[in-house]
Structure formats: C-alpha cells, structure tokens
Image (tube, rainbow, N blue to C red; front, top):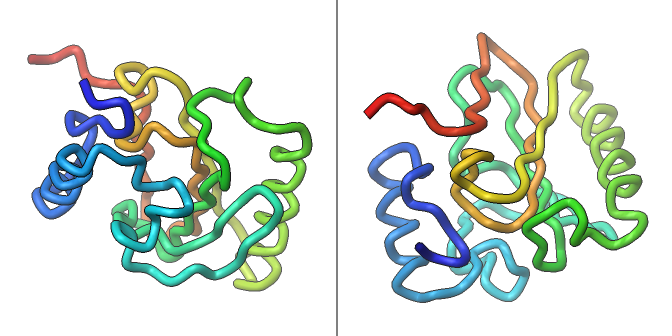
Length: 144
C-alpha cells in the first residue's frame, strides 16, 4: 500500500490515472512542493496553515467545491499544529462571504483511508455549495 495515496478510493478513470502516476513518483501530491505538479487548479488563497483551491474532482451536485489543504504534511487530526482548526474556520468564513454562499457544508477525512474513504493521505477539508444533492463518501463499501 502506498504511503501517500489510496487508489482504491479514487473515483473516475482520469483520477485513477493521476493516482497511478503519484504512486510511481512516490510523493505526497498535497505537500506544497508537489502540489503544482498534480493539481491543475490555481491557488485562491493561502493562510498560515492552509492552501485554498478549487477541487479538481468536484463532487457531483456541487455548484462550488473548494478544498483547503494543510500546508504541513499530516495524516491524523493529532498531527495538526495548534491553531490550524481555528485558521480553517476563519478561511471557510472568508469563503462563505467572498463567494456569497447562502448554505452548504464542509467535511474532513482523517486517518486510515480504509475507514475514511480518502484518496490522498494528507489532511484536507472540502467546502461545497450544493446545486443539487451532494454525496460525500466516507468509508468503503463492504460489498465485493
């Protein structure tokens, strides 16, 4: 199993190809020094702890879908530095005001990808404004 990504959680053929390349390169695609190589969306904003960008794998049903990526590598919540969560909330308040979003949601997966359903093993938080029903995948189906 790769230490940076989980191809089992990659949805869509194009994204699976990208994850395959990341596995071959053996790097974390969300670490700041690698982000530009794998993420084609521009950076919207940087804070002390987070990088904000559009999610290039937008959830179906989302009108707006942004991702905040922690600037230091961390897989678990306990690996975050003090102040990171407060900074994330401040960033998402900015997003809501800047984009004039009247309602939506945000989520963050953490830890083992077999349980979280994440494809990248680097803390990041999703922020979305729905246009239609938005489904968030957390965990894995036990159906084979």
